[in-house]
Structure formats: C-alpha cells, structure tokens
Length: 356
Image 1 (cartoon, rainbow, N blue to C red):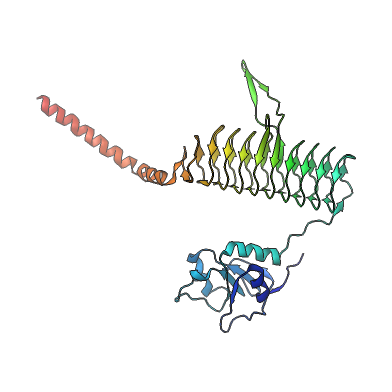
Image 2 (image 1 turned 90 degrees about the vertical axis):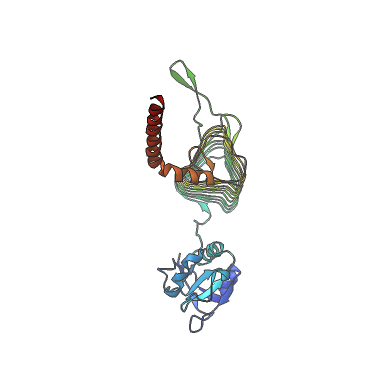
C-alpha cells in the first residue's frame, strides 16, 4: 500500500503537537509522505529527535519537519530551515505519525481456499484466515481477528477479537489469547514444559497438563516459546511486550506492562512482576520472584528473589550501582594482586628480621 499524504497541519493535529514554521521553511500546508532517520531524511519526510544530544542534526537535515520536545531547544541551537513540531513525547508522536502515513494493512476478511477449519470451530465476524491455516475442533476465533497462512490453532483454543497471528505460528490445545494480541512468525504457544522425573539413570516425562493464558494487548515477537504449565497456567499479563527469541518456561507468571528483550530465558515456576524491564540475554532461574518496577540489565542473571524496585545487573544480579563499583574494582585486580604480593613479601622479611 502506498504511503498516505498529510499536510504539516494535519500531522500536527494527529500527534497533538504545536507547529513552529521556520522563516523561509515549509508552510503548514506542505505535504509529508514518508518518515526517515533525521540524518537521511529528505524533502517530504518527517523525522524526530528524542535525545537532546542529537539536536546538532537539525542544522543539516533535509527533512520537511522534525518532531521534538520544545524544552530541548536552546537559543544557540542551529535549527536550520526545518519546520518543527513540538510534543511532550517524541517517540509516541512518531508512532502515531507512522500509523497515519504507513497504516498496517491486513488481508481482507474471509477464509482462503486451502485453509482447514473443523466443523465445530467458532469463527467470529469479519475474520481473515489465510491459506494453509488449520483450526481444530472447538477453537474460538474472535471478531476481526487475522489468522495468516500456515498458522496452527489447536483444540479448544480461544483467540480474542482483533488479534493478529502471523504466518507459521503454533497455538497448541486449550491455550487462551485475549483481545488485540499480536504474535509474530514462528512462535509457539503452549509447547510442553521441560519436565522430567529421574528414575535411576533415566528420565521419565511428566505430562504437561496445564495451559497458557495470554491477556489483552500483549505482543510477542518471532520465534518465541511459551511453554504450557505442568498444572495450572503459564500467564503473560496485559500489555506485556516480548521481543524475539525469548523462552518462557512452564508455570511462569509475568505481570502487566512488562518488557522482555531478545534472548531472555525465564525458568519454570518463576514470577516476574508488572512494569519490569528485562534486558537482552537476561536469565532467571526457576522458582524465584522478580517484583514490580524492577529493571535487570543485559546479561544479568537472577538467582534469588528481588523485591525492591530499582535497577540490577550482573551474575548474580545485584544493585546496579554496586555492580558498577564491582566492575571498577575488577579492572584493578591485576594491580591489587601485585600489591598484595609485595605486602606479603615485606611481611615475610619483617618477620625474619624480628626473629633474628
């Protein structure tokens, strides 16, 4: 689909901003048809500055308009000839711009030839189901949902209204997805949890009889695995966003509005609170709790309960400030080791002199 065209005045209304037309620059009737990074934007593009340190790019950008916070400007800032749109949250405003200029287009409602729907499946109004999709018995698909080609929906699965399931996603039996859930390609919801009972030198598979429940407005990236519970539910709370290549094990409970970045692994029966941020490659061992409003830095490993809000880093994860100080000390360890050896030598010499 071609980009939509918006005048600067229309664009400003769309983001709830304030238009500041530079003398000699674009008029409020100038048209924007695209979006681009500030350093590569050209005429017809809109861009944004979310970090005041990047304001120097205003002087040279060729963008028709730039979105930014007015308080970030200084009298000495060289703003070039670019028209500015002032907002409180440039990231949010740019998201709204992209929605207006490049709206997401899904397939039209209807069932494509080659899709296989069980006769007991319940399909809502204006649902789109792609080629090769399989929907098993007693599954329920909500109104205006989009099921892309190659998707597998198991028995008794429930998918809420306006959810989008991208190609080659698997949702296994009895899992429940809320409204407006987005799941990207290659993800598996409801795979068996990794559970085995050891008998002598062998492992006996423990049946994973539970399910997965994903609340409203959750987005899950590509190639993510969310395992079903052994008993009960694995839960992803409302509004949580999960990046690509994440593993959520059996019986894990994740709260609301939490962000989980790529390659995170959460072991079985752990709980992650609301408004938590897990950086890339964070690991959480089994049966621990991460409380609300906690940030774990990239590659941090949680081995014990963390209950106090704040930032944590390292292996094992500790207060981020303490971790930074520990890293500073670790860089000086060779020097400290040398000094300790010198002190040891002097002590030995002193002891010898006292014995004489």
